[in-house]
Image 1 (tube, rainbow, N blue to C red):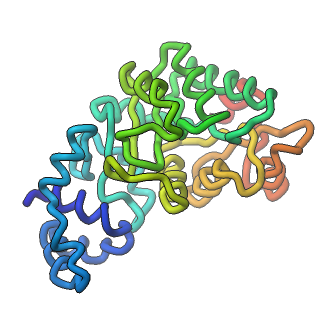
Image 2 (cartoon, rainbow, N blue to C red; image 1 turned 90 degrees about the horizontal axis):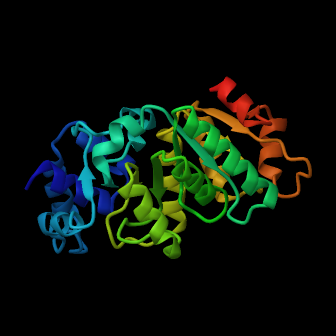
Image 3 (cartoon, rainbow, N blue to C red; image 1 turned 90 degrees about the vertical axis):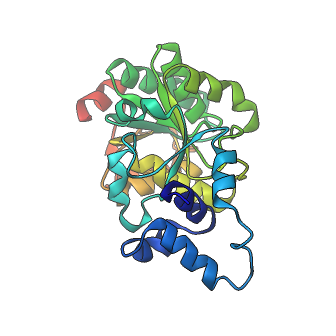
Length: 274
């Protein structure tokens, strides 16, 4: 068994933190064999790492930290650094992840937020940064589309396997991203469905890949707040767009009031801060 197959198997059953200590002392193949021996359920012994890896790589590539395309910024996650990444468009990752700026916000945004998402993503893309988002409805999809209209590649982080888009009807957008110099990443093998845990982990991955996060509009406790909070933990620059009404932007208002984000009223100001 290769280290790649062992890491793919470990990532399918354990979080990075659960095996970090063992991997610091043993090879991935040894750690997998150890976990199989200790498993009383028989679940791991029935898993076929090489077969599962080959099947998954019919859809996308499984990158590991020793690959040349591996994003070096993920080291900032420490023990939570992924064991591997499932990627479509992996050959573009080195250039895409050198200057990534996340543009994110509500899934059901106000009309003003849609306009701001387009304006901020367009400015960021024109300035040579890679626009990254989650492909979700609302602000994130709008950011991808705006960069795409500029002829710029974007980076999408999905909370499910890359065999399907999330949401499902964003399949054409996902294909447009990966077919035009962009890339899509996931912590999860093809066939994995979205859950609360995958959303949380994917938000942290999106923040870790970035040099800055622009929060266009977010209700408090919205999914976009997870990315913003992960950015704070990782000491990434967090820019929050002030909202005139504040009704749909409670998250922005709170982060600005607590001095956890920098106020960013315009794309021009975002470029200054970047």
